[in-house]
Image (cartoon, rainbow, N blue to C red; front, top):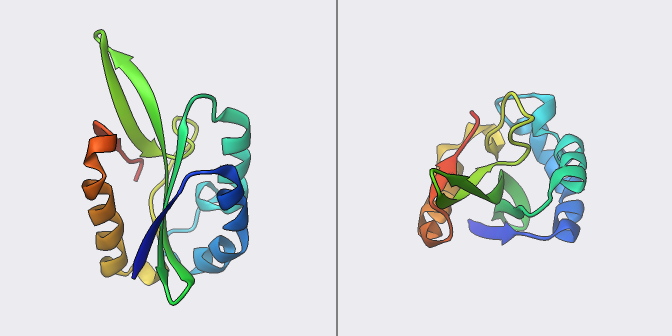
Length: 127
């Protein structure tokens, strides 16, 4: 399994077909998981946020996506880098999109995020 971080809007746009092929295999179905909703949200609300689409591939087939974004927040005068679900705070539910709920794919995505811990201070997921 190969994990790739995609962080530009063109890469996000190119994910449309693989994403839409993967989504019906995800255990949870909700509008907030759709490529169309998340892409539209990103185009209109990205501001100073950084796109973090952590993707899992097996034989060039998309099998998992952690749709995230990195944003800076301040609390009590402290600067925090928060890695959170794409669409926050406008989503009711969000999380990883994983083929058949495969735990190995979830683990690979989370292992990648942990390996990148120096890039963020808080991981905030809406699940």
